[in-house]
Every structure is written in C-alpha cells, then in structure tokens.
Length: 333
Ligand SMILES: [Zn+2]
Image 1 (spheres, rainbow, N blue to C red):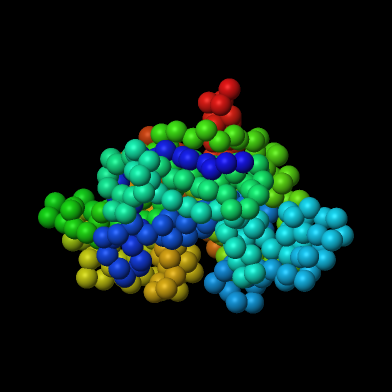
Image 2: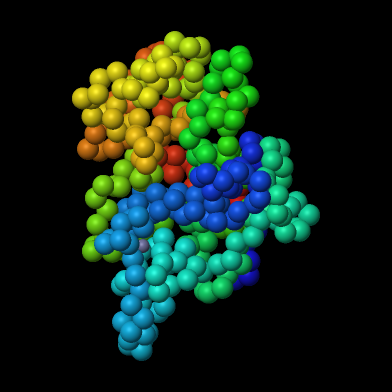
C-alpha cells in the first residue's frame, strides 16, 4: 500500500516541543510518541498486549536469529514478529526492529511543515510505509487518530489545567493543547469485533502489563461539553475532583494524604495525573483503574462539581469504541 494521508484541523495549538523545550519548532517525534501512547492503550483495550517501554525488563526486543529462523520455517513476517514483539512495537519499532513508516507533517498545500501547529490550522499527517503494513495496522492507526480527535488529545502538554480566573485565563499554564478534528481520512475501518480478534490473536503472554494495566481504552472515560478549572483563589473544581486542596497556595497537597484513590488520580512528580481537562472546546477525560477506582467512583467525584443534572454523561471506553467504529464504517459506505 502507498502512503496514508490524513487531513487534520488543530482546534488548539499542538505542543510538539520537548517537556522542557519551547514549542518553537515542529518536532515530529512528539506527535509520534503521543500516537504510540494511544495506540498502545487501544491495543490493550481491544484485549491485546502492549509492552511497557519504560521498563527495561519487559519492553520488547527482536532477536534476529530467531526471527530469521521463523521466516525460514515458512512463517509470515507478521507471525514471525508476533512470536516476539507486541503489536505496538511491530508498527512503531523497538530494539532490533525499526518503525514501519516515516512520518511527515505537511501544511495544507502539501509542503513540509517546520513551524508549530497553530490553532485553526489545517495540516496533513503523512505516513509513508518503509515495510509492509498490514491492513489491520492501518485501521488501528486510523482509529487511534479518530479516537484522539473525538475523545482524547494529541502531543505534549495536554495535562495543563484550564482556569476561569479572569487575570489568568491566558496564562501559558492554562492553555489548551492538542485538540484536533479529522477533516478527511480515506483509510478503511473494520468492526470492533474483528479488531478485538486481531489484538487477542496477537497477544504475547510473556508480556507483563502489571502496573500500567490501567492505560487501556477499557478504563478510559470521557465527558464532552464539560471542563474542570480553577475558579478563583479558593476554588478549583479540578483539584476537588482529584482530591487535592482547593486553595491555591496548597494546591499540590492532598486533602487526605492517606487516600489512595486521590493519590493515584492526582499523580506526583514524574507520574501523570489521571484526569485531563480542556476548556475550549470543553472536554474532560481520564482513566479508571480496576485496582483503585471504578467508573462509578469517578462519576461520584465528578457529580460533586457538576451536579446530578442530565447535561453531562460519562462515556466509557468500550462503548466509545463501539460507536466510533460504527460511525467511521457508516461514513465509508
Ligand atoms: Zn512491545
């Protein structure tokens, strides 16, 4: 198959700098890293396995001798890969196996882009295959982008908290980053059941997913049309939901330091928060964790700030995947 282009409109700026670097040049690696993170979450959500690349002991490595031997025995490239490395590493690469594609960001006229992606800007994500990319991989990549567009966020700095405080609304740390809209994608889509079967068939039982099991679309939730923010010096709906003190000068402290749920939701230095919120357009999403807090627990916390009214609904990862795949299939008819 030839290259895959997807036309995207940025609803907010997209952060492509490093964590500490300024967002002055366009760094494609930032977008690829984010795409991969969601791709892994999607694979786990479909019942497959994706390794933890931050863990030296459990991340995938391809042993070339073993790989060549499997090919000699008549196995397909994908089957030979699937004996050793997870689906995310097959597409995005790992030690011993390079990424299957080159990624370019083009401006709307198709020229290579070098400047950061601004709000309202239309760009093209171009994926050029370097190796055979399976149909199901293209579909999963396409679904990942749709998922990010409809329910998640792309790139770095997507964890900044919005603010309603008048003097601080434009402060850098309260800006929204990473919300996108798909303008056009011509790639095909498969039914969720088919993708689940694929992910499960390619499951690598030796991969230890413990500890980051929660990074799965199965645990994902999203509320559209609502956001969490600091209202003034003493009130912050974001902190209230996380279980942190609302008063600004104490905002990094937990209300109850012994509360494991708050500890997990609020994260810590080097560990991400599990709730993300955007003001414009309004969207709040996050993760539950089977070992710590379920969807009901999340909903209870959100009710404390948004009330019981029916003007918001917590959408769960599984139902999102159902409706999203159906919606894409519908548009392709
Ligand atoms: Zn892997």
